[in-house]
Amino acid sequence: MKGDGRIIAIGDVHGCAETLKTLITEKIRPTSSDTLIFLGDLIDRGPKSKDVLDFIFNLENTKNNVIRILGNHEEYLIKTWERRQKKHLFADNIEKQWFNVGAAATLRSFDIKNVRDIPACYITKIKEARKLFITNDFVFVHAGLDFTQDDPLLAEDMMTTIRDFSVQREKIGGRRVIHGHMPVNLELIRLSVDNQNFGFIDIDNSVNFDKDGFGNLVAYDTTNNEIFVQKNIDRQ
Image (cartoon, rainbow, N blue to C red; front, top):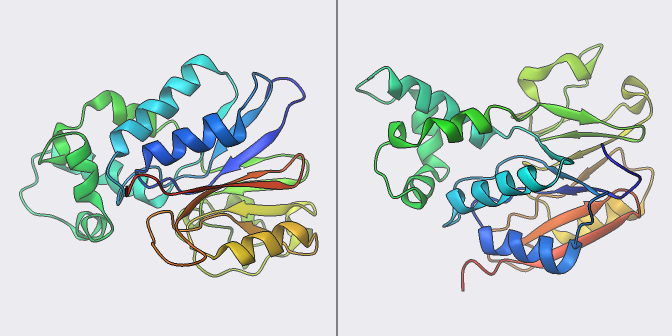
Protein backbone atom coordinates (compact mmCIF):
# COMPACT_ATOMS: atom_id res chain seq x y z
CA MET A 1 0.00 0.00 0.00
CA LYS A 2 1.11 3.52 -0.74
CA GLY A 3 0.98 6.49 1.60
CA ASP A 4 -1.12 7.00 4.71
CA GLY A 5 -4.51 7.34 3.06
CA ARG A 6 -7.78 5.56 3.66
CA ILE A 7 -8.31 1.82 3.21
CA ILE A 8 -11.72 1.35 1.61
CA ALA A 9 -13.44 -1.95 0.83
CA ILE A 10 -16.07 -2.14 -1.92
CA GLY A 11 -18.77 -4.80 -1.94
CA ASP A 12 -20.07 -7.07 -4.71
CA VAL A 13 -20.49 -4.95 -7.88
CA HIS A 14 -22.20 -7.60 -10.04
CA GLY A 15 -22.03 -5.84 -13.37
CA CYS A 16 -23.38 -2.47 -12.23
CA ALA A 17 -20.81 -0.21 -13.87
CA GLU A 18 -22.64 3.12 -13.64
CA THR A 19 -23.41 2.52 -9.97
CA LEU A 20 -19.76 1.73 -9.31
CA LYS A 21 -18.48 4.76 -11.19
CA THR A 22 -20.84 7.04 -9.27
CA LEU A 23 -19.85 5.49 -5.94
CA ILE A 24 -16.16 6.01 -6.72
CA THR A 25 -16.27 9.46 -8.29
CA GLU A 26 -19.02 11.14 -6.26
CA LYS A 27 -19.06 9.38 -2.89
CA ILE A 28 -15.60 7.96 -2.19
CA ARG A 29 -13.57 10.44 -4.28
CA PRO A 30 -10.30 8.58 -3.77
CA THR A 31 -6.95 10.34 -3.57
CA SER A 32 -3.65 8.91 -4.76
CA SER A 33 -2.85 7.77 -1.21
CA ASP A 34 -6.08 5.81 -0.69
CA THR A 35 -6.29 2.03 -1.14
CA LEU A 36 -9.38 0.54 -2.79
CA ILE A 37 -10.10 -3.12 -2.07
CA PHE A 38 -12.68 -4.80 -4.30
CA LEU A 39 -14.14 -7.81 -2.50
CA GLY A 40 -14.97 -9.85 -5.61
CA ASP A 41 -18.06 -10.76 -7.63
CA LEU A 42 -17.42 -7.92 -10.06
CA ILE A 43 -19.36 -9.68 -12.81
CA ASP A 44 -22.76 -11.31 -13.60
CA ARG A 45 -26.40 -10.31 -13.06
CA GLY A 46 -26.01 -6.61 -13.84
CA PRO A 47 -25.88 -5.31 -17.42
CA LYS A 48 -22.27 -4.08 -17.72
CA SER A 49 -19.79 -6.62 -16.42
CA LYS A 50 -17.25 -5.80 -19.14
CA ASP A 51 -17.48 -2.10 -18.30
CA VAL A 52 -16.95 -2.89 -14.61
CA LEU A 53 -13.79 -4.82 -15.43
CA ASP A 54 -12.53 -2.13 -17.80
CA PHE A 55 -13.14 0.58 -15.21
CA ILE A 56 -11.34 -1.30 -12.43
CA PHE A 57 -8.44 -2.36 -14.65
CA ASN A 58 -8.05 1.27 -15.68
CA LEU A 59 -7.97 2.27 -12.01
CA GLU A 60 -5.17 -0.23 -11.54
CA ASN A 61 -3.25 1.31 -14.43
CA THR A 62 -3.56 4.82 -13.00
CA LYS A 63 -3.33 3.99 -9.28
CA ASN A 64 -0.89 1.57 -7.67
CA ASN A 65 -3.10 0.91 -4.66
CA VAL A 66 -6.04 -1.06 -6.03
CA ILE A 67 -6.48 -4.58 -4.68
CA ARG A 68 -8.83 -7.19 -6.12
CA ILE A 69 -10.14 -10.14 -4.13
CA LEU A 70 -11.35 -13.18 -6.07
CA GLY A 71 -15.08 -13.89 -5.91
CA ASN A 72 -16.90 -17.13 -6.66
CA HIS A 73 -18.42 -15.62 -9.81
CA GLU A 74 -14.95 -14.90 -11.17
CA GLU A 75 -13.97 -18.47 -10.28
CA TYR A 76 -16.93 -19.82 -12.26
CA LEU A 77 -15.92 -17.70 -15.25
CA ILE A 78 -12.27 -18.74 -15.14
CA LYS A 79 -13.02 -22.47 -14.84
CA THR A 80 -15.69 -22.38 -17.55
CA TRP A 81 -13.51 -20.35 -19.93
CA GLU A 82 -10.54 -22.69 -19.47
CA ARG A 83 -12.69 -25.76 -20.02
CA ARG A 84 -14.32 -24.31 -23.15
CA GLN A 85 -10.90 -23.52 -24.61
CA LYS A 86 -10.40 -27.29 -24.69
CA LYS A 87 -13.51 -27.59 -26.89
CA HIS A 88 -15.66 -29.47 -24.38
CA LEU A 89 -19.10 -29.88 -25.94
CA PHE A 90 -21.26 -30.15 -22.84
CA ALA A 91 -21.60 -27.96 -19.80
CA ASP A 92 -20.25 -29.31 -16.53
CA ASN A 93 -21.69 -28.59 -13.07
CA ILE A 94 -19.63 -25.43 -12.58
CA GLU A 95 -20.77 -23.97 -15.89
CA LYS A 96 -24.40 -24.83 -15.14
CA GLN A 97 -24.07 -23.21 -11.73
CA TRP A 98 -22.51 -20.11 -13.29
CA PHE A 99 -25.38 -19.71 -15.74
CA ASN A 100 -27.85 -20.09 -12.89
CA VAL A 101 -26.36 -17.02 -11.19
CA GLY A 102 -26.10 -14.53 -14.03
CA ALA A 103 -23.49 -15.61 -16.58
CA ALA A 104 -25.69 -14.72 -19.56
CA ALA A 105 -25.58 -11.04 -18.58
CA THR A 106 -21.79 -11.14 -18.61
CA LEU A 107 -21.69 -12.67 -22.09
CA ARG A 108 -24.09 -10.00 -23.35
CA SER A 109 -21.85 -7.30 -21.96
CA PHE A 110 -19.02 -8.68 -24.13
CA ASP A 111 -21.46 -9.00 -27.08
CA ILE A 112 -20.71 -12.72 -27.41
CA LYS A 113 -22.64 -15.96 -27.05
CA ASN A 114 -19.86 -18.37 -26.05
CA VAL A 115 -17.63 -17.84 -23.04
CA ARG A 116 -14.56 -18.99 -24.95
CA ASP A 117 -14.80 -15.79 -27.00
CA ILE A 118 -13.97 -13.60 -24.00
CA PRO A 119 -10.47 -12.27 -24.80
CA ALA A 120 -7.74 -14.11 -22.94
CA CYS A 121 -6.36 -10.84 -21.60
CA TYR A 122 -9.46 -10.46 -19.40
CA ILE A 123 -9.04 -13.95 -17.95
CA THR A 124 -5.37 -13.28 -17.26
CA LYS A 125 -6.21 -10.08 -15.40
CA ILE A 126 -9.06 -11.66 -13.44
CA LYS A 127 -6.74 -14.49 -12.34
CA GLU A 128 -4.40 -11.93 -10.78
CA ALA A 129 -6.91 -11.39 -7.95
CA ARG A 130 -5.89 -12.69 -4.55
CA LYS A 131 -7.88 -14.81 -2.12
CA LEU A 132 -7.43 -12.47 0.85
CA PHE A 133 -5.71 -9.31 2.01
CA ILE A 134 -4.61 -8.64 5.59
CA THR A 135 -3.93 -5.40 7.47
CA ASN A 136 -3.21 -4.83 11.15
CA ASP A 137 -6.89 -4.68 12.01
CA PHE A 138 -8.78 -6.51 9.25
CA VAL A 139 -8.88 -9.55 6.99
CA PHE A 140 -10.46 -8.80 3.62
CA VAL A 141 -11.95 -11.80 1.82
CA HIS A 142 -14.83 -12.47 -0.54
CA ALA A 143 -17.06 -14.90 1.36
CA GLY A 144 -15.43 -15.48 4.73
CA LEU A 145 -13.09 -17.80 6.60
CA ASP A 146 -13.41 -21.38 7.84
CA PHE A 147 -12.86 -21.06 11.58
CA THR A 148 -13.21 -24.82 12.07
CA GLN A 149 -9.60 -24.96 10.85
CA ASP A 150 -6.64 -24.33 13.15
CA ASP A 151 -5.50 -21.55 10.83
CA PRO A 152 -8.45 -20.11 8.86
CA LEU A 153 -6.04 -17.96 6.82
CA LEU A 154 -4.70 -21.08 5.11
CA ALA A 155 -8.08 -22.61 4.16
CA GLU A 156 -8.22 -20.96 0.73
CA ASP A 157 -10.80 -23.31 -0.78
CA MET A 158 -13.53 -21.86 1.44
CA MET A 159 -12.69 -18.18 1.01
CA THR A 160 -14.87 -17.67 -2.07
CA THR A 161 -17.80 -19.91 -1.15
CA ILE A 162 -18.36 -20.25 2.61
CA ARG A 163 -21.82 -19.09 3.66
CA ASP A 164 -21.95 -19.61 7.40
CA PHE A 165 -19.09 -19.07 9.84
CA SER A 166 -18.56 -17.87 13.37
CA VAL A 167 -15.60 -15.54 13.78
CA GLN A 168 -12.96 -16.52 16.33
CA ARG A 169 -10.84 -13.40 16.37
CA GLU A 170 -8.10 -15.03 18.42
CA LYS A 171 -7.33 -17.24 15.39
CA ILE A 172 -6.71 -14.21 13.16
CA GLY A 173 -4.74 -11.97 15.47
CA GLY A 174 -7.76 -10.15 16.89
CA ARG A 175 -8.73 -8.81 13.47
CA ARG A 176 -12.23 -8.37 12.07
CA VAL A 177 -13.35 -9.97 8.80
CA ILE A 178 -14.55 -7.69 6.00
CA HIS A 179 -16.41 -9.62 3.31
CA GLY A 180 -19.28 -9.76 0.82
CA HIS A 181 -20.95 -12.76 -0.87
CA MET A 182 -23.97 -13.06 1.45
CA PRO A 183 -26.50 -10.21 0.98
CA VAL A 184 -27.50 -8.39 4.14
CA ASN A 185 -29.64 -5.30 4.63
CA LEU A 186 -28.30 -1.84 5.35
CA GLU A 187 -29.42 -1.96 8.96
CA LEU A 188 -27.15 -4.93 9.68
CA ILE A 189 -24.26 -3.32 7.81
CA ARG A 190 -24.56 -0.15 9.87
CA LEU A 191 -24.93 -2.16 13.08
CA SER A 192 -21.79 -4.19 12.41
CA VAL A 193 -19.82 -1.04 11.55
CA ASP A 194 -20.94 0.72 14.74
CA ASN A 195 -20.39 -2.24 17.07
CA GLN A 196 -16.70 -3.04 17.45
CA ASN A 197 -17.61 -6.34 19.11
CA PHE A 198 -18.87 -7.68 15.78
CA GLY A 199 -16.24 -10.03 14.39
CA PHE A 200 -17.27 -9.35 10.80
CA ILE A 201 -18.62 -6.63 8.54
CA ASP A 202 -20.55 -7.93 5.51
CA ILE A 203 -20.96 -5.16 2.91
CA ASP A 204 -22.88 -7.08 0.23
CA ASN A 205 -26.20 -5.23 0.01
CA SER A 206 -27.30 -7.15 -3.12
CA VAL A 207 -26.97 -4.26 -5.56
CA ASN A 208 -29.35 -5.87 -8.08
CA PHE A 209 -32.08 -6.65 -5.52
CA ASP A 210 -34.88 -4.08 -5.71
CA LYS A 211 -36.26 -4.23 -2.17
CA ASP A 212 -36.30 -1.93 0.85
CA GLY A 213 -33.00 -2.13 2.69
CA PHE A 214 -31.22 -3.63 -0.33
CA GLY A 215 -30.25 -2.62 -3.86
CA ASN A 216 -27.18 -0.51 -3.05
CA LEU A 217 -23.48 -0.75 -3.69
CA VAL A 218 -21.74 -0.28 -0.35
CA ALA A 219 -18.17 0.69 0.48
CA TYR A 220 -16.58 0.67 3.92
CA ASP A 221 -13.84 3.13 4.88
CA THR A 222 -11.95 1.15 7.51
CA THR A 223 -9.76 4.11 8.38
CA ASN A 224 -12.64 6.35 9.45
CA ASN A 225 -15.19 3.61 10.25
CA GLU A 226 -17.59 5.07 7.70
CA ILE A 227 -19.78 3.57 4.98
CA PHE A 228 -20.65 4.95 1.57
CA VAL A 229 -23.95 3.90 -0.02
CA GLN A 230 -24.84 4.28 -3.69
CA LYS A 231 -28.28 3.18 -4.89
CA ASN A 232 -28.33 1.11 -8.06
CA ILE A 233 -28.60 3.41 -11.08
CA ASP A 234 -27.98 0.71 -13.69
CA ARG A 235 -31.64 -0.33 -13.56
CA GLN A 236 -32.85 3.11 -14.66
